[in-house]
Image: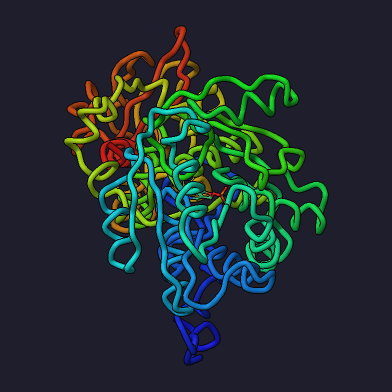
Length: 466
Ligand SMILES: Cc1ncc(COP(=O)(O)O)c(C=O)c1O
């Protein structure tokens, strides 16, 4: 780490370490995408989530308005992370905490809150939000019945979006040096997207705010219908984002686009973030990264800058997203048949112009230059529409070093056998055997035309992503 980045401060309490989380470029899951995608790693907050930012501001506002007095109790309906944030702040301020939580939440989250000394009350998930047994209504009742208690009320408390306006927004702006063009966030209470989105739009009204929403949440449809269609929510497995009601802390006018994502897509991307980028994050981060990649693919502009969040740590989901048994039981793991055509779509290379090739008449020098220019290790040799041979950087550079005259010989003289041609609807798994040591790639044919190339390295990435 360079000296200028080392943090030499000594902090007075863990609360001072909240915020200024690192911004990390996604480089592996973004292969083939030209638009930069950055992730703000909220997992680096001491409580492991973006919610750490709102714990203290909520408590301090209640102290200021006189509703919370020394020795008091903080009550909240929370899916876990807000509980941790409040519990950290309460521990340092000497308050007691009681949290209510729907029963779909991870056991890790319940244990974690108890570790901080909080009391946890579990409520049923499958009840409407206004049902007396819902986690929100239960929290309200407990706050009402407990002396000297406040309801943190993150869904109504404006201290929540205000905290993101004061911290998350400015950090995003400064860390991107004003380059940010798209913010991809989720909405649980809407605090993050509202506070950060408002700040960024004040800085630059052209910034697009995109909300990732789980299938089953009512938010996307409510927004798309201009606030006229409030559908019935359906349970989903992603935790922390999406809603079955419209929170007061969410300002839908700041959102330019909604994208709806399934649990399966969200969890698959969370696992890829961990395995390919080394970023251990929960399902909601997977959902947001899935949306960020889709926005980046569509924008297709190296000068744009898509920024999203790693909202909370994967440790909170070891018994779910990162547990193959749970994933299988919930039909999240039996991977659909992925075809070669699908992979080309993901790589963004499904076009006749997508295959970089050389011709038999080109010189070895030209072929090597072409490979270096496009950062590829092999090329098909095309004679019109037919693949008549192949060349690889490895082989050509060895031959060129042995005898420099080889560089002026034609590719036709020196090429190896052609890459196999496979139809686009073939399953990826079916071509593993074709990608042997002597054969680094296959060409993909669709409607009689060569549409793309799948290399050993593409296959490796595909297998790792599984
Ligand atoms: C797990 C989790 N909790 C909370 C949030 C933030 O939600 P909000 O600020 O809308 O409550 C997110 C995502 O942004 C999340 O993934």
